[in-house]
Image 1 (cartoon, rainbow, N blue to C red):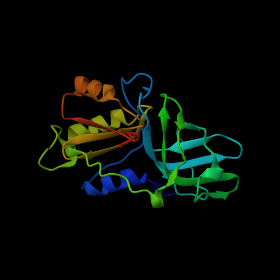
Image 2 (cartoon, rainbow, N blue to C red):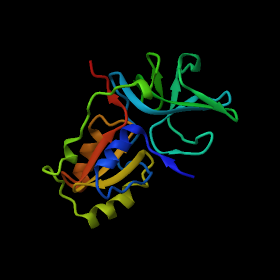
Image 3 (cartoon, rainbow, N blue to C red):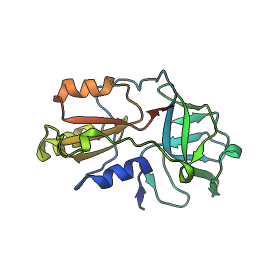
Length: 199
């Protein structure tokens, strides 16, 4: 089976030569942290039977129907979600979803936008700029990647530009600070799949 990456990550990964990806989670982060403001995320929303809808922000298996996992979405209504598909008791689609994150579940605050119709604001991480390299070597980062990828909150990792990029559902800066304290500055670059809503 093939694995699809969230669209927001795919472009970023393609931009990095020799990028390495792997599923996983996050260290010394403690429990996932809630956000005080509304956030927006892009990914596959999927529900099976009468079960809750899930917001899949990590890899998605390219089966039919697709398979993925993620936090529960509270208040999801498929009748308000255009461009969905259903097969074998599974309903899914790809959307930009806005709402509130309590550290465990994501509560929608407005109808979702199909990703085919969504024009996200540019959000380029300056740590991918070749003129701004990180402090890690390839071998050091590869060893670190094997450790961090096993952490339960990490969605994905890859090596680029002297950094180990680590994608999590949401970080308010506390996880980045914890990594910096543990491994040194400019080694691990944390990215949040859920981003603040820009006015």
